[in-house]
Image (tube, rainbow, N blue to C red; front, top):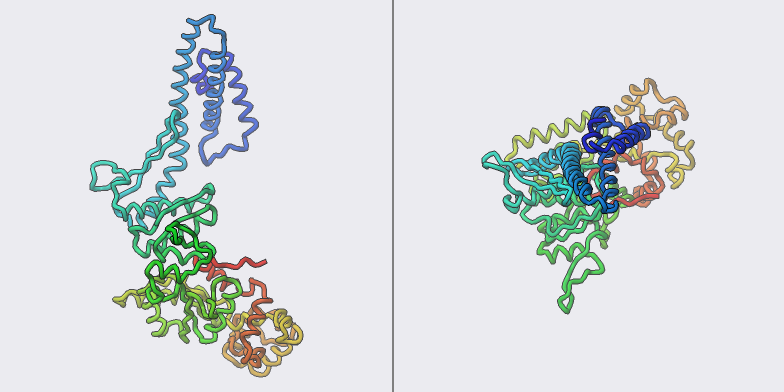
Length: 506
């Protein structure tokens, strides 16, 4: 520590003594700031001593400048000393800044950029950064490319336009991954240029995620960048009668696509696909989507840019064909398979389904989209019907007279025939005994929803509402808390298309 102070204040004993006192005081008052993970305690004190001695030297310099010029020659000698010390200060500061900014920050950032660059198709080499820490100029970071076949580093501008777009995309991804990033404004013109449609879609997702913390404004001529955003976030620029650029007051996505030269058939008019097991799920799922997401239906009351495909099985040929079709279109990974829980282990079912399509993919020349865990939802309960069996909500909407009435009816049906069903036997095995009274039913409602076949339970209470089932289920969804459907909604929220359309509930 003394050596660090002496380096900057040699020949100034009074300043050295006072500086040492201040260093000890700084250590005492700010000891909680010491972080062993960033370096040793010795180095921490040396850093404090360096910066404190720099402050003293600058203060001494200003004092010398303000002195009377009567001792001009001695002052010149002193100024020479000051100039030398200031140069040393500048050099030392540059070294400290370069270490702090590059070694502690820029190197990890560079690593993240390269990971994304290579993932996105950047095969030209490795992105490197050079930091200029000259204190007389603004700090400057230069990016360059180190390629195996080249004789030296090349400027980023030497990359082809497509590779530069990939680099920009990778840079944005790395910035996005920084949880401590500072909010700002990002302006981009036609980010889709020279990007493959898949990367255009990826860039749209990144821009949306960036918009959560920063203001993002971009222009585009590609529909691939539009569909992650809702109509409130999109503005169409057109020319008025006088040839001036104006913004249309109402955003019409179909009109925008027409202006861009795309027809509905070009993009299948679909941005997301749900694959469900039963035809009933196909009619009930939209009711849940309508409650929690905006822009689900068009003006004619039809699903807007969403397709729900019922298969009657998650592994039949129809699903297989649908996936092949999806992979040949814009959608790619914008799909979610919803499979009944069937009282079985969810992770085992999901893994089995992913392995099935992976095996089919290896055999198929047309290539299926990769079915990942994110594309598969195994329902928490036996089937979708079991989510509508909350006695408290059912009482509110008039399906049962009271909660106690619900438990009495269910117990009666259990003793009558439910216990004989395969799913009923599974329930008995799970809880270790047969249901004996209404309190027993109340205590094991969660297991009942998980184990008992949904059709059997649902029909007991909702069978008489077949003609007005939609109205009854809408009322149920409106009254039920979000947690009732938490696993379904959380799975849907993982996709940017729906996350950006969430209705924020009170």
